[in-house]
Structures are given as C-alpha cells and as structure tokens.
Image 1 (cartoon, rainbow, N blue to C red):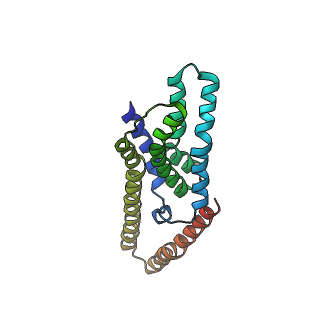
Image 2 (cartoon, rainbow, N blue to C red):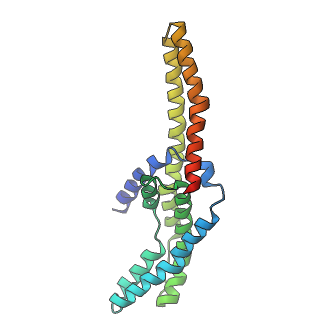
Image 3 (cartoon, rainbow, N blue to C red):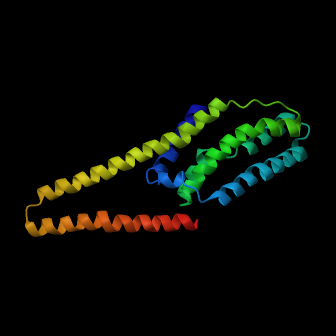
Length: 199
C-alpha cells in the first residue's frame, strides 16, 4: 500500500521537475519565506493540532498522538505536485518539503516527549529514502528528460533542414531556428524568472 502511494506521488511530481531550474532550487534568496513556513509548521500547527486533539480526543491517547505526528510531518511530494498544478513557486516548495521532512523527523521525538510524555522513534533512514524517491529522483529524471527533449528537438530541426532543398526555404528555417534558440528561449526564461521572483 505504502509503495503504491509512493509510486503515485512520484508520477505526480516527476512531470513538474522536467522544466525545473535546478540552480534556483539550490540558490538562496528566499530565507524569509522558508523561515516563515517552518515557523508555521513547527510553532503553530503542532500546538493547534494538539489542542484540537485534547478538546475532542482527550480520552483516546493514540488518536491524540496520531494528530500530533501528522501535524509534525506536514509536507510530502504532494506539496510539490499541488504547487506545480497551481503554477506556484516550485523551487521554494521543493526546499520546504526537504526542510520540513528532515526538521519534522528530528523534532517529533522532542514534541511527543514534551506534550505527551511519550517516546516516539522516527526511522530517519525511511525519511531520507522518501525524500530521495519523491524529490531527488524525480528531479534527476526531470533534468535528464529535459536535456533529452532539447537534444531531440534540435536533431529534428537539423534533419528537417537536411530534407529541405530550396535555398530560400533553408535560409528561412535556419533563421527561424537561430531566433528560436537565441531570442525566444531567452525571452521565455526571462519571463519565467521574473514570474518566479514575484511569487
């Protein structure tokens, strides 16, 4: 069951990664956004969930613990998927997911002990495995796919130019290819970068 869910999340995340600008994921510049997100994740949500649990499930400690654990590990590959579907800031969402999963795994035993007096062991190896499967593997495959598509389209253009015999048409399509590679691509990237910086 877990493997089925994980594979489906992978299939939802992978397409989002094809057009990802990997350099921007590892670049800084969004410290404030990341800090606010993690403050909400670990200073607001767990206590809110614990309060709800105490209010409605005070006599059922396992449900209360389940609510607390769910609130402490709020991010997953779905964060990346829904951000991509909403045309949001995918670079920031990837960082939030990785930071949230690691920080949540490390913080969960402390919160459980402090709020419930319970010792909870988090299998960090499984968490890192999940991060690799739902973040880094789709990122790598997306990068490879993007490079392969660019190479294939470029090769198709070259084959098409070899096929065209008329000199006027060859000159026209050669100029179109030049404009596409040196003008349109740059303009699209500039537009994408400016949109990402505003989000």
